[in-house]
Image (cartoon, rainbow, N blue to C red; front, side, top):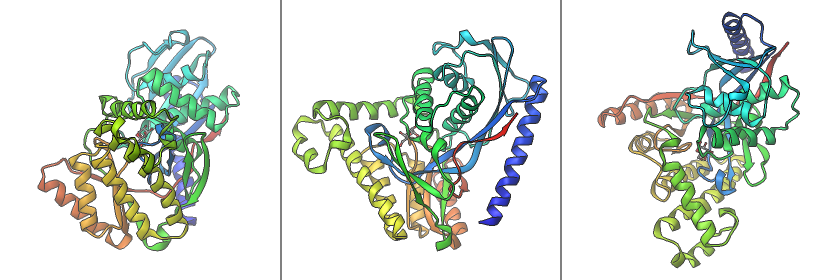
Length: 393
Ligand code: GLA
């Protein structure tokens, strides 16, 4: 653990130096604040954050950095270390959801949701892999929100920041995401997964240390297309809303399998299986916490497999590349595997014995090649710290 801490501090100071240098080079003055926020992997509890369920994500080590300085006029200037020589400039009073744009809308959504009316220069250094289902957008939003909260002494607590950034993404960017990604990016603690109750945002840290049991959580980025704005995600949310309204309940959280069976004739077949995913997935999250606390990784693996089957068959958000990543990992001996995030592409996770890492990677690569899929990418990550200020003044 000690080597990890040393490496961690070294990486933070390198990243701090890099973004500070980019800020000065681009804007000609020194930033007043630098914050960082991580991407996430969700261990289990998929597509239930918007149904008041429980989720169990953890923060990954990859993070996005935001350096911000106040301006004396009403301009907002935004730049990124990944897109050198391009600065987006507008007046603070021009920030509104109708404004067209690209990645900078995630930054603007936070200024809008937090009602910041002051001119600022913002430099972003995004180090969370894009489009991999690892929540690079939440990392971006939460790094900016954490920096602004401190710079303008807004005093928002982490729950409020999670709700504000989610509101920005929903209403400004137009992505109908739930509350999980922003919450874990803000609240995660190193060494733990975050058991989050999405009904009221209360949370508990659950120690997640697979390494000392000779295991590893392999993250497989399928490199398949992943976009929540494509309609599939909104369609799943809409079917949950219909179930809730037809059954006159407040959310899926109030449903049991028995109640659902008894209501079969008022629901369509699709609504029934979507609701079955929600009810069974909420139960699996609580079972996964018990398994983790008992260090019963075999059971955890079974729950990951059951979650994947439910997402694939009942919720229908998987895709051939994700299924291949899961199946190939299992055939190479993984204890369990499943797709993570919104689905329709992005990443899968596999809980494997550390000594099998290379064999698992090889099996997944072979499976992808046999289907002519784009080659996948592989990561691992220890559960890391949530958003933090890394430099003031
Ligand atoms: C995306 C959304 C989250 C959550 C997951 C699915 O990552 O941003 O709010 O709904 O999909 O669990």
